[in-house]
Image 1 (cartoon, protein in one colour):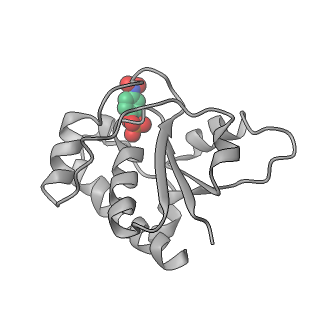
Image 2 (tube, helix red, strand yellow):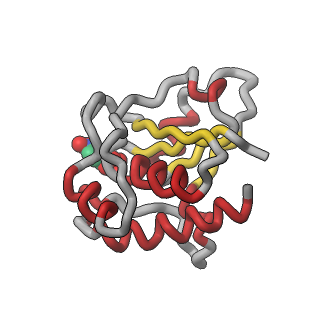
Length: 145
Ligand code: 4NP
């Protein structure tokens, strides 16, 4: 059973910290972290509108700080959960030779036909729709663990 989960998106200020915040509340027995494949926001807390929408549903992610995904993350985590296919490609490009860590699309845990990606609310501005999908995926992940 995977115990160390890493959520990965592009900036690590919208989707992956929200996923981390939801799953750490739902599954306190597992270790959670998140990172972004880009470095633009390293050291920053989650994006303000992202935090506000989550806080309105009871999820506090104000303690989280953005960091960049690194090759070492393949050693440190049992399961890497990416938010879209671009994240997956960026992560796979850093996989060390011989590493077998599982990388999965987090949205697939929501079990919605044809849904494989979490749309980025930094661009869509649909912070609540994003949370709806993340909550369903978090519930599906909990069942799968
Ligand atoms: P995220 O959203 O990947 O869900 O954190 C983004 C936030 C900021 C940027 C890209 C994606 N950015 O390029 O600044």
